[in-house]
Amino acid sequence: MPELPEVENARRLIANQALGRTIVAVDDSDTFVCRPHSPGELRAALTGRTLTAAHRRGKAIWCETSEVLGGPPGPGPDLGIHLGMSGRIVVTSPDGQSAEGGDPPDRDAQQRKAEWNRFTLEFADGGRMALFDKRRLGRIQLNPDIGALGPDAEQVTRPEFAELMTRGTIAVKARLLDQSKIAGIGNLLADEILWQAKIPPAMPVNRLRRADVDRLYRALGSVLESAKAYGGAHTGDVIAARRPGGTCPRDGAEMRHGTVGGRSTWWCSREQAWSAAPRELLPEPASRR
DNA sequence: AACAATGTTCAGTC
DNA sequence: GGACTGAACATTGT
Image (tube, rainbow, N blue to C red; front, side, top):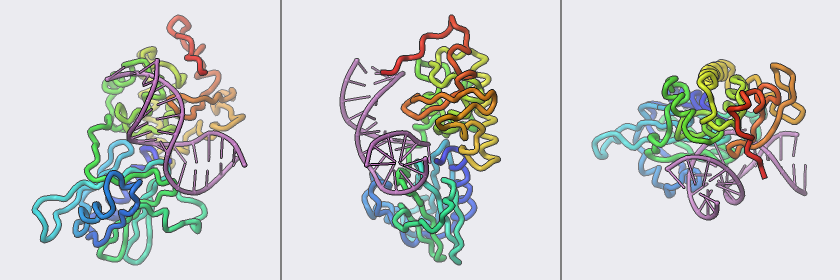
């Protein structure tokens, strides 16, 4: 579930609670989550160091690490953390108290299998930091390629955004989800942003008019702001209507469902219909076979 | 029991 | 290279 707001919570948790604590042991035995590293590689790279800073761009987190005492001079590698679809960061203090950030906590905290901790740093003070991830789609990687990501969705400027959102022929929703173009928007945020801006998700980006891009940019800002304020992407106004029989919270029209950009997509049949745009500017919606 | 699900990445095709 | 599809990952919820 984690999209930009949840990932920022996880980053802040690390920044507030995990920095400066000496790493004495590392469980990097999950070769899928830690790919392409082999077991022991992350342990060798991190043991004896501390995390010194936690950064984020889009949904990617990376932590700088300190020099290791008695080792080669200079800082250690960056520790890259991606929460995937269900990952959560759990930081435990020396007295065993834990704090979490990322995927919203389960109601049922008892259903917590130890093997869902996919990666763990143990600190000298007796506490730990773990990537807890039921679905195992999270990822831990040394020196992740942050440069492959587009500008963070919270920082992108209007001119940058206009450039990004009008080049090519891809569906506007697919472009919003393309992390190499703009980083941090996930499936739920994308549906919410398009709904707020009243734009059909399958509209090719080169068909967006200036006014559409302006509405989209404003919706991006307001959706991120309210998701942050209310605790995550799943708190959006239209998210509750993403179900069979759902109706638009604004006009009560039936919600439509389909696949756009390979992802499950819901939109208002009235406000986000193709016919809501000037007819002469629109191609037929791509037919699905 | 079958199917879809918040994300990424890779292989393959046109 | 752009656009698109399907598969893979593991588990939960409907």
